[in-house]
Length: 157
Image 1 (cartoon, rainbow, N blue to C red):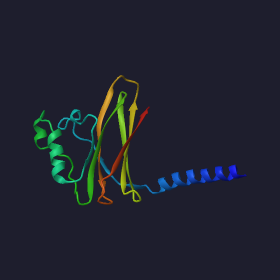
Image 2 (image 1 turned 90 degrees about the vertical axis):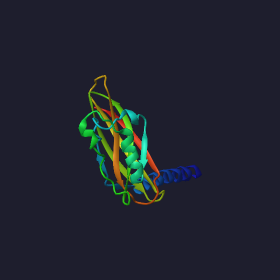
Image 3 (image 1 turned 120 degrees about the vertical axis):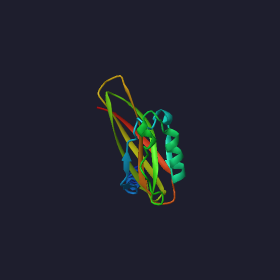
Image 4 (image 1 turned 180 degrees about the vertical axis):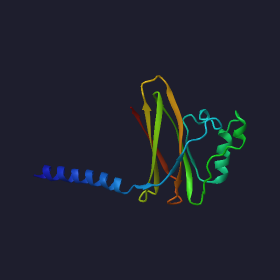
């Protein structure tokens, strides 16, 4: 009988904690965008995970990845961000396939005062090609904490 109660307690604790963790995540309305590959180089971002919380660092980042292959790049800019109410995150990904599709979500956990930036990288087709992207988003600020966990899930269609 003690074993039965212990098993019941362990199950209750396990399922109670995992349900509690998922309930504490608040989905956020984020703005995702693709950088113009003619003017901003993904190569310079290989393996990068970036969190930017102020305008001056954002401009330094923009200038560091800018390339001047075309005249239009002189005036190309990343989207404006009001850093009083939002911040920037980005993660470099690669997925094989003839083409790729990316889906991003962000969550905030008020108990741990942290964010989760989740990317689904979907490779389409069986081509021997590696698709690279810098998945970035503007995330609304929920607190002054910028603890961000970035996760990528890879799929093949």
